[in-house]
Image (cartoon, rainbow, N blue to C red):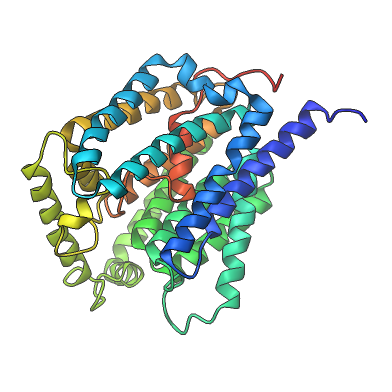
Length: 387
């Protein structure tokens, strides 16, 4: 029996990676224990595939072999975080989750070994199948006037949709991309997730930059000229426009408005900041900050949660990883595989905004965070085939 060609094999592998992300998107059970078990099983099953197909290259991914600074910063981060995970408030939770996060970073690096050089099939599959799955959920369940995802977490669902928006730009055909973007807009409005809605707009804005730069100088001038009457029109209907924006963002909502839900978030932000100030160097332990809060179940701010949990040293090391790898993404966005690199930049920009309102900055519990980690550990130089 003839062996499958390189193109067929890489297409199949990329499809599997995309479906792996979809599986993590929809994995849920009747309770938190079963949901966590399902996600862990789905999270780990890709490891045997990677070891079987790529062997040693999956064990030591390309990015870690070629970028010594990245490897050093990541090792230092986990070494700094481990002592307080052991000695912190809840070591039975902190230590396993820290090890799982380290394993997640390793898996994300290894996944690049399964992708072909452009790496566009996996995000395309994830975007189309994931959007279709959420649409089916939206239209087959009676939400009875509640926010889409109310039985789970509308904001977490919004975070997932942001990654679908970013991944849609990998879709080859414009019709498919526009369908995903339209469906994502409908789902975001139904979820009522304000941070995810703004994060998606940031993703779309960043993705528009190469398109504008690629246009002729004459078209750029026309776009600038046309933006002037649009700005004048927006100023002319200023009060009505602000009312519409306030309605979408629920500024005056009695439970989620500026004077209600947002005020509560500012209280928990102050409490989280005070928690970090009490242990500023090494923090209180990975994923342990919730045990110290009295105003909410979490910090609802990924940056403050990171500071409180791993201290200024751990946060600085992770910040250095992000800054260092952003440099590579910017450097490569005009290279041979520029499209996937620019998608990574757009997703990181949107995720960076959402992290001001999300529970965690470093997380392996959802596809969006995993995609962010994948782009942070993207290889410096791509390999040339699965040989």
